[in-house]
Length: 417
Image 1 (cartoon, rainbow, N blue to C red):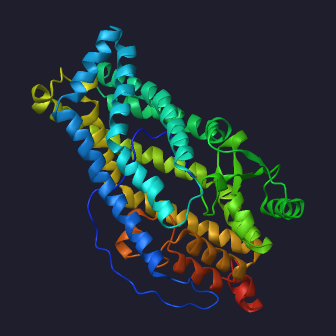
Image 2 (cartoon, rainbow, N blue to C red):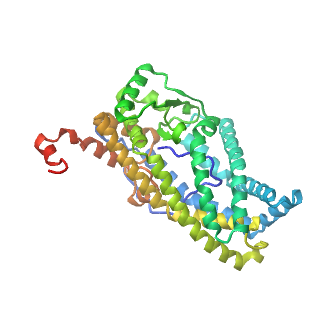
Image 3 (cartoon, rainbow, N blue to C red):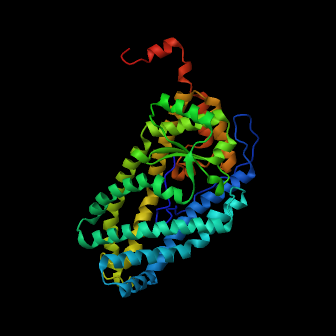
């Protein structure tokens, strides 16, 4: 499942290095991933970047705060306007630009160097910079407005954590609704699936799944990557299933049907709504804790940071440090919910298609194509993986065949018997 992330002001990465266990490359059979040293090395680099990236991001925010760069940005915004809301918007935009410059080396290494190092990207440096620029522009527009609204609540509402949380709910829904139509097309071209035979079979599969007027799109992700993916996005009128053109090119007809059976599971089982509900609940916890830590910190260190009290735009890095840190600590909860949804979607897809082997071979191709370790360290999977490990998924899909149960076994499992 794809969750749009280009609207996030800063990258939420993790903060402590975890033990990484080296594994030897091993040969595999038909239903085993061909694990290579390159795959293990790529996975380790990604994990290290995940953890080190958080520390670096927090370090940037601390630097901006303690060196009073944040206060200088506030003063610069105040020289432009005396209107508090507009001042806050300008300040937030300046802060995002400054932190983007500080974080650019890490973003370049993780987003451009590493994918090219492992032959996972088709993108030129110029094209990558253009996409990053587009993402930054969207972030500046959305982030400056949302940041100014948050600061306004901090300034004027006693229980601002609750006010921000209530205001956040319609904003989250709106962003998910508009992303497929207005934001995602900024980076790629989306069009209805062109393969008529595959489209016919997918529509028949969607009909059996109970999905009426289904919308299935292909997107030209080969402009940026050589890897494969498919996802469900949007809510209500913008809800759709999207397949990358790389997936359509590399997978067989049955493998695509098996993968899309999984994606239809997300659609039918309302995982977008459930995920949104979980995010809203987690946001409530984060904001409740954030107000208490934020106000204590401002009371103690305001003069050291040249912050003029609660709600001063210059205190925004401190608020964001708190929110990002709590979000990081709750990462296993978010990942666990996502993994359960993926398991449910795997089960739904199998019951819909009964394509056990094509789904297994599709998972193998996904692992080998993205060069991701199919059997990660348990801590890594627990903390940051939104999907069960590939080896676990392959084992499950090869053995999950409830339709092959003996008649007497099926009768015994009927409700009321």
